[in-house]
Length: 628
Image (cartoon, rainbow, N blue to C red; front, side):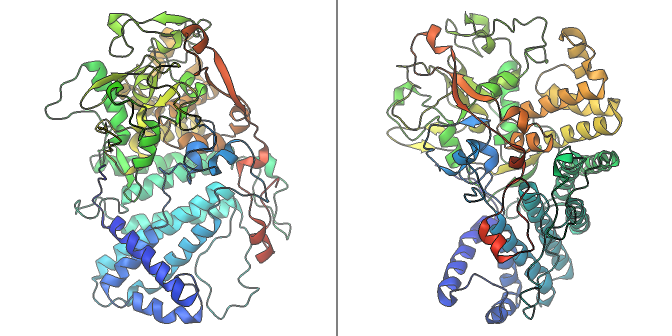
């Protein structure tokens, strides 16, 4: 097992955790609580640069572990993956995915965690100027980093809970109990405050990381501007912009928490923010990743696949705007990787249990670059029929293997991101193929830890990882990509279309992403192959194209969960049954039958998380989440 990490942050996280534990044991209070007993501790933390740096990394330590299946709801609490119950990682996401969340049982809550983070960020900003052995330029940079983190933790709260209390500063220890009880603030106020913080942070952040040996993962100006773009696109999206569902969502004093009138100018503001972020990223030589490795020569087909796969798995590649080095991808790769090597069938370190659902397989385009249901050259009605691969398809599907017709003539991202019964799976040392019907080597071995849909998340597995002898496993881990350039390009195309309809710049940026995927531009593809050739000419039609492009390009990276929410499409998508192939069958005729795994339900209230009853009792000025 290999963990590749070059950032000091991670080395300090264990130190910080130990400090928290020791201080908690000594005083029966949480680390640096705002109470008089901790004044000396806070003062000590800012006497010298070395101690202040530890506190800086304490502020970083609250960043979410985005690759953790048990704590990141965007991975397995929606409809993108399905797993055997009980999860091998945790029951918690399963409860959310099945719609079992309630005000009495709040799952995957981060309310307390991020408000503790905000407290520590404010302590840092209030005290960093006291450090005597730091240059002012360094004080300014560290302060800008923490201002960014303060904005980001507010954003994570807003994304999960909607309108939330804003913590502009820590209350003094002389505050009365009544003063500590603060209400939610209007959602537009929260968005505006976060945007202001990000502008402030960007002004003091470096353009690039100069010391790549120790500082990769620290916040830069392009990161701040790109995250601001994402947040402002969310603010302009239907969930937050003109959402009449929240007319009755008000504070205890009757003050509304949402403006239910649509504001078209929010999309213009979002588009400007996207363009500013793109300019900042491209000025530092960021670009869409293409595969090139010394000594490795591949066909055009496989090179294309590796460009797509490694845009997320190749650490610190030039497409990654922000990678989180404190996140380990070891476990998610172990869950995603099937038993690839028939010579090592007894190795149970890999599970292949993280199974993309049928709807994810169907959302990818055909090789003509349009949806399966629209492609006039594709037999959509016959997509479930069986077909046998020929030699010309050998780099995509095993020659002579019988599989479903929908696995043929699909776009490169389909083959790069997914594997299926009969698929080819390239790793650094060997080319494998998948055989996952009952009795074959990727089939069920026990009642847990097996694939339930017939699809595997190839995209999440680094091509350098390797199944070893016995129970050995080498995993080439990489920092989790919190945001990459393709995401920003598609946000810009979306904001341009929503602000002024289809236009050249919007086509330019979506086509950049499609070109890396080996597809024609939108206009050419739809004109030549779609049953709706004029779809891209209207705002509504182009919106559908952009949204599907995002769902494909960012599949399995945690974007779908939040995109469906901001688009207000979760009611549509998460009320559909979760399906896959009948994986317990050995005969292809029976294996390739669509099986319903679960019938999900989603209500309006599920767009935002409920608060726990304890928080409401402690702070009567808080109101419960809408519908809970």
